[in-house]
Image (cartoon, rainbow, N blue to C red; front, side, top):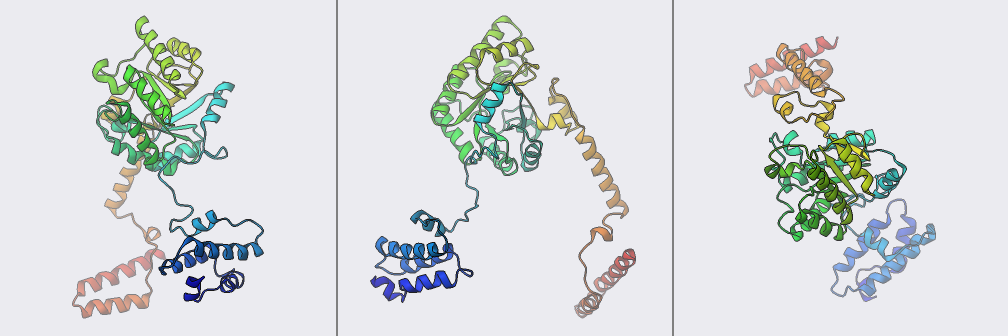
Length: 404
């Protein structure tokens, strides 16, 4: 205990500090104090720290019957707030975030699963408030957010920005992030590394990848084996438009329909927890749904899937613009025309600013006392700013008049 003596710290001092100053100090402050004090001495070792820890624990336990462990003290010494958000998937609390277990239960009960895309904090909040089961941060952001004609241009780093923003807003849905084109095709190692980044840096719970080619199914298998939940995607796979010849529906011929079924089964066999079926005939989607033992999520695939997904901007009618009209699919139902409301609001804002209606005194809430206005004008005059002083006086008079 030579170190404690050199610091003039004794067990009785620590005990008294905890008991007498319980309202003023907490365990975190005391533990940090002890640890930092010991670090200043060259003789510091874990024996000394254990002695201090024991004293703190004994003192706290006199007031609280709950046990005080070394882990508790180490947590108290951390400089990181206990409620800080770390860069990984959120804990799957059954009372809060939708889990894979809950999705499987819904699937077994025959309850439809809802999924919608989101790309930023506001859309994540809206999905959260609506109680949507799965929130997909889709590479469709390339088209509806970034204004591209395809999903190909968006990068992994751009996707991660979208993922993080959505994760901050959507607290309840299961979060799935798309692996963008070029981020997982080269090798299984690349695929796993990308998927890990989506969880660790993007805050997602799972990833989605477009399956079809054997190499992509192999990539899905490797990601699942790495401990990451994977959602497959078959039918129209927008990342493959180069070989598909554009955004063309699939499964319209016997061979194409059989391929959709075979690919879906292959994705199930490598461990995918669900499969998205895009732009395929309803009978083909029904066959896939019947053949699989995991949920199917349809988008332009008819009513016989285990659930449905739509793009956020599409279902809200967010953008009434020629570009968006060009990329809005035929299968999408617009549940609102939010774009019209936005346009109307912007035009009204422009009109009120132009005519001087906005901002009125109602939207100018910050006041300055009359005496301070006089003093301010006096200082402006001393600075030789006569026009500025007059402007301040006139503004004060007008604001007072509008208030009356």
